[in-house]
Length: 593
Ligand code: ADP
Ligand code: MG
Image (cartoon, rainbow, N blue to C red; front, side, top):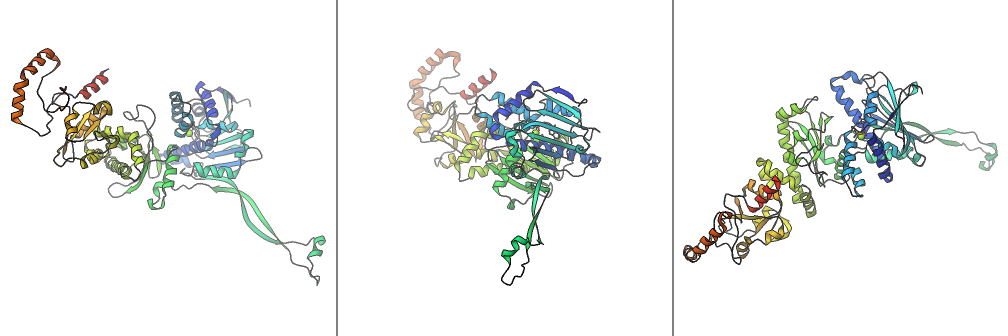
């Protein structure tokens, strides 16, 4: 073709294609999920734009995805009536890695050193368009954007470093708008070109795509009975004694091919919570967020009245990868819809505080404008109300895990998201009452099992007024500190704060259920056992020694005092009442380095 132009892939693309083909060969069928998800994204984009530019729909009003197989030729065609691509977009989108999903996937692959990570990573990221080459020798993408009056064909082959783009000239292949992908399957993968196989994969992977997916199916079942003339040679045997002829009929099953809708498009959040099973919620979660593990909990609710919205929220079962996620979340965890139209997954920060950025879900509002922007969201009173409700629901969900019979679930939650809850204590004092019961610590009486503050309180001595804690860098160093002696002697439980953020969090809380938190390493620790006479006597006896030690240590200490807080150790270094604890000092030092 003279007007066909040849292009080289960006180097990363070739590398990515190699990676995909080499790490996913045992999981080839993901190609269909990826291509359908691209078709669905393209339809989402078109639907979104058509809200303000209805003329975009004029060439083809239906928004759908159609998949046709041809087993004789070993091809699969996937057609969507979405936004399509211009010639330049073909180059930008299919020749370079500017795209979020794939770029993230590459980055994560680079970061992960261990070999086993690959298959997990694939579960977490969409691998995108190039997965088509898992099963295809050659791929044609014929596409028509409403921005362009021409339709273009991108064509690429497996194991090639270049692709071509040409104008579509075959009148039989022209489409009014959207994209048609033709996969020419590899010899060993031609088995995918069967309608039943495709139908099964669509049902498995794409049942929650919100546009109808049609597959080209052979329809049987229309049976007609027709009378047939007897074959004279057979007729003999069927004649009865009287020589009468029996009437003969023959059943003809008429088969024909037609489109048949394969997925259910009613969004799960519009259904009644009573009708949706846990399995369906979990399947939706995995499909919508490209997850491979079930969530720990989910919550489906509708709010009416002042502000109307529907939502399904989830607590994942593992924390996201990467270090900066908590402080600087760029998570795409909340998919925002307005009146069923997908708007964006970029507004997590407007709908949830960052300490709950690990929550995933969909939110569909009837009250926001379709052209909603970050600025509108930030100013909106409606969003403020939504945010409050969402936060409350998130807490209910987490509480549900904490109260569940299955103790492992909360352990798992705490291990993955405990630091988010602690961050919440620092950042959201309004919700302290909801956050504090979720905290877990080791203690002098529970060195291996984490306990809650409620469990601590249940275990308090009848006359005990405070919640005692000591901050240290490990359970081991906490339990060996001399500060503990007196409390152990009196059988008072002491929380071990072994995560650097623990102490800051506790100091932010100040109290829990009217009990003050008391640091047992501070100088004014009062265990309520004053004995004035004894103190006087001790002061007389040891006063001079104290002065002597003070002189020897000079500026290194603020003071030397006689104390009744030790039982076996001769002396202990304590911090001043208003000073930093030793642990805090360690923390501050580590942060200034
Ligand atoms: P991602 O979907 O994560 O962006 P992909 O590799 O799956 O990455 O797709 C790359 C890009 O190609 C998409 O972002 C989109 O711009 C474009 N694209 C792919 N398939 C289609 C399609 N069916 N219609 C329109 N654009 C498409
Ligand atoms: Mg994609």
